[in-house]
Image (tube, helix red, strand yellow):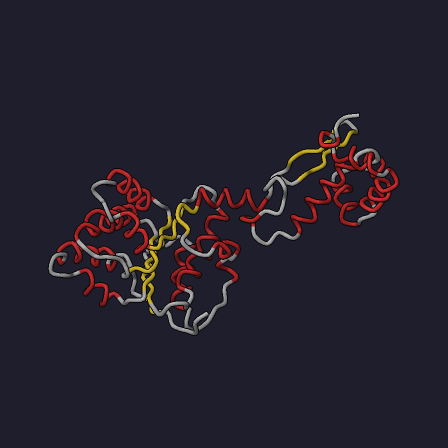
Length: 298
């Protein structure tokens, strides 16, 4: 006999106790969930008579996948690869499947080039968001963007009013209907801090990122106005992004705690007044008007 550690799961059960193996097989085949899944695959229970290890793996995958709450923390022994059973030439074959949540995550990772927001928001849709009087103007602008408007949106207000969340739900709606879209939600101050500390040393890499942001089909810049403002940031990051997106009329959303009048003060400093004015002009000429979002924090 082979060494126990070299035995398959089915052989281990057989070796330990045949009666236990038969009882376990009967228990699994009488499970309504397993019965339904086998029927869905046109697999008759009789074909599983000598496939206990298949049944155990299949049952384990069904159970763990049904309990999955976070695709980033897969419960399976082989992450994102649940056991699947397939009928081929009247024989049951065990195959490694692919987690649909993981597939969706991979798809979203190619579409959300930047995703600076809680990952659980990816499940929410714009059509299902709560509509309140305070949100009306912002929701209307987002709806117009969904239906093809190229107008930019500048929304401001206190934290935790749903500014970023509502923008993300719109992007979720858009990418779910068009797999070719590439979008980004960027914490702008963090982007500046991470990339502009030693700009000239990393110029090639940073310039590629700026070009990438410039060309996204939809771009959301969050926490706008909290970033470090200097001529380097304006001339090498913000103004190139806005100029390109203005020329191609690419939808852009600015999310801030500050009104545009305060942004003007921030950007039109003694050493940045000319380029800072250009930034403000780019924004103002592309928005219908700034939107203040109030309401109760959530």
